[in-house]
Length: 429
Ligand code: HAM
Image (tube, rainbow, N blue to C red; front, side, top):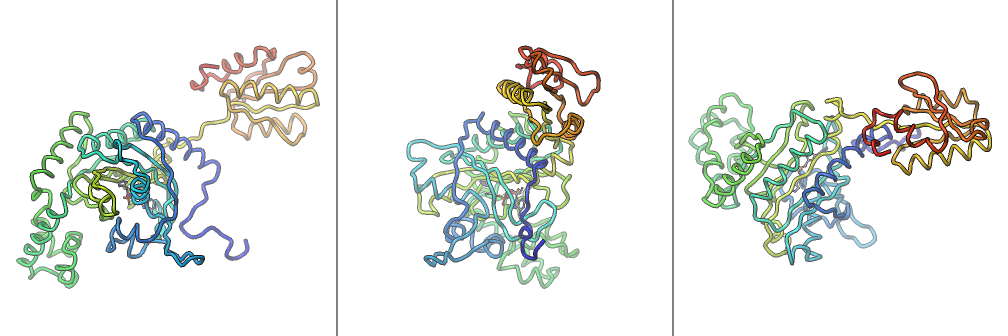
């Protein structure tokens, strides 16, 4: 291929076999979200850069080095390809006064862009399904969203995804915790390495990630934000735990769980699997009660999450749940009259919900049957001019062998369904 005409590094094509799995995943998710009353919205993939700086936070990895930011040459405005969906949704909700009369449950989906180092499960263009509840103080809606995800894993037949929850309190509680951390590590100055010393006042939370062996005791004993929550944050977290217990949803409280975006407060949660190596977080979210005000809106408590679609597809594949639904039938035909009957029979079967390909491009019966086989269809429907004249077609099972059966055209729907028994979706045929 000519140099420079390949896809951009970290941005992938989703080819038809894989796209079928994406669609099955997206259909299942949409169906689950809508059963909980979440409605679809669509927002642009490009927003003004300050939106992300203000919402995600100036000193996060995403804003500091991962955003695709460019100047709109026509008017000099700084624009950014969305690295996530929440900021755009909140912007739209403020702009259109969406929560003025009542709170709102919504979801969206599509590509997001982050200039990260590509590896399995981490890409520069990736896709999320993103769910937001705007105007709800929680914790009932926090638990609802977690339950919705538990239902989705079940509907997809997935296992081994575990839930971690934490509360990161409010801004004042985080400030107090930061001061406590600095004081704690000041008392252990003798074991700090150069890195930790440098971070001590700039970002003491990062010291908790250090692998420096002499530091490990001090890290283990460091004050935990979860132990320092004020009454309101504590009650919220206890409420969430009770609701999850009532719903029999298993979780681990992970006091170290923090998120990479600055807008969160109180509830944060992640669903993780160890089946995908380093990129094991398949969904993550939490509460962002201050974001509307930060972006110039009225105070509006809110909670949401996003699912990483590529990671879900990898997981479906790893757990053998990624088979695309096969074709029901492939119609082969030779002769002019046969072609007309073939197309008419195919339309009738489609009217009843079956997926049918009609052979295109001519060729002998033998070569058409080879194509029928290769298509993965369960059944071949064979129409020749003789059959057409007699008002019949032949149906042959391509997977289980056996003879072909002559079927009057008027009975095709019923006989096709009976022969195609392994598909329960078509029980109504
Ligand atoms: P996030 O944790 O940054 O949260 O991303 C959510 C999910 O998107 C991750 O758990 C992961 O599955 C997937 N993901 C993130 N980056 C990549 C990447 N480079 N390649 C592949 N997958 C990726 C958010 O984006 C928040 N907006 C979620 C949210 C909604 N919070 C409240 N409402």
